[in-house]
Image (cartoon, rainbow over all chains, first blue to last red; front, side, top):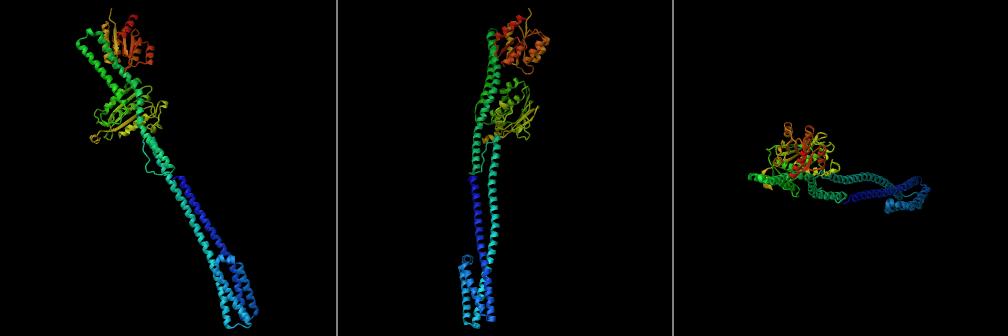
Length: 471
Length: 122
C-alpha cells in the first residue's frame, strides 16, 4: 500500500472518530437540556403539590371550604400546565410516567371533589383517602424529579468520561499510526542509504527483506535493478579499463620489441656482409641469436595478448614474483622513459598464491601506471613482495616518491569514477583493481603523504592445496 | 695513417658485437660497452674519434654521454641510436650537437656512411 494511501486512511479514521464523538456529545447535550427543562417544570409542579397539601391540611384542621376551592384551582392549573408542557415532559420522562402523574392528579381531584360535595367535615374514611392520594401524588412527582436530576448528573459524568477517553484514544491512535509509518519510512530509507553507500564503494548487492509496495518500495526496486545492472557492467568495465591501460602499454611494448628487432636486423646485416669471413660455428651462433631474439619478441607479444584477451576469472596456483616480473615486461619501458628508477625487492621464498594471473597483472599495471603518473618529474618506484603479517598471505607493495594523495581524497580513491587526475582519469582503474582483489579474497590498502609519496599494498591469501580439490 | 677509434655504447650486447665486427671490417678500432660508466672512464684513457651511443640506458643515458663528450672532448663526434624514436628526443640530441641520430632497427650501411662523413669532416 502506498504511504500516501496509508496517511489518508489513518487521517480519515481519526476524522471519523472525532465526528462520532462530536455527534455523541451533541446528543448528550440535547438530552441534558431536555431533562433540565423538565426539572424546571417539575419544580413548579412540586411547589403546586406542596401548596395543595398545605390547603388539604387546613381543610382537615379548620374545615374551611375555601381550602378545597384553592386545591381545586391548583389542580386545574397544574393539569393545564401538564397539558401545555407535554412537549417538554414526554421527551424527558416518557408518556407512561406522564400518564401516571396525570392519573394520580385526577385521582386526587376525584377525592377532593367528593369531599366538597359532602359539604360537611369529611368522614375519617374519605379523609384517609385524601391524605393517601395527596401523598402519593406528591411523592411520585418528587421521585421522578429526583430521578431526572440524577440522570442529568449521570449523563454529564459519562459524557465527561467518554470525552477524556476518546481524547486519549485519538491521541494514541494518531501517534501509533504516525510512528508506524515513519518507522517504516526510516527503515526503508536506512536500507537505501546503506545500499547506495555500498554501491558507491563498488559492492553491488540487492536490498533484501523489503516487500513494501509503497513509494519507497518503488525506489528500492529501482536501486536493486540499478545494482544488478552495475554488477553486470563491472565485467565490461574491467575489460574496457584493461583496454585503456593497453593503450598506455602499447607504446612501451612497441619500444620493447624494437630492441630485439634491431638485434635481429643487425645480425642479419652482419651475417650477409661478412658471410664469407664467418666460420661455420659463427654462422650457427648468429642463427641461434636470431632465434633467441625472436623468442624475446614472441614472449612480449604473448604477454600483451594475454593481458588484452577478455576472459573469465581463471585462478591457478601462481608464483607472485613471476607475476611481478611478467608485469614489468609490459610496463618497464613506460617506467624507464618517465625517468623513473625501479627498485625490486622480491622475497624468493614466498609460498604460492591462488590467483588469476592476468587480473593480478592488470592490478599491478594499474598501480604502476598510477605511480609513474604521480612522478611527472621522475622519481623512484619500489616494488616489493613479502610474507603477510598474519602468515597466511603474501603482500605486494608498490611505492612511489610522487606527489602523494591529499588526505581528504584517500577514503574515496577506490570509489568508481573518482579521479584525482582531472580529465585524464576515468576514475575506474583503482575501483576495478579493488574489485579484482576483493574477488581474490584479498585486500588492497593505501597510505599516502602529500609531497612524499604513495604506497599501495595488495594482500593475497596463500595457496592451500585443498582449494584445488574444491575447484 | 693511424686507425680511427670508435666507441659503441648500448645495453643490448648484440648491437655492440655486430657494430664491432662490421666496423672492424672497415679498418676501425672498435670498443663496445654495455653501459656508460665504464665507457666514460675509458674516454679518459684513450682518444676516440666517434662515439656511437644508445639514447635510453639505465644509469647514465645517451643524452648525458653526449653532453659529457661535447664538453670534455669537443673533437669527438657523437652518433645516437635509439629504439625510442620520438621527435623530442631527436630535437634534444640535435641541440646537444649530435652528429647523427638513427632510429632502431639500424641500417649498418647508413651508420658506416655517417661515420665516414664525420671522419672526413674532422
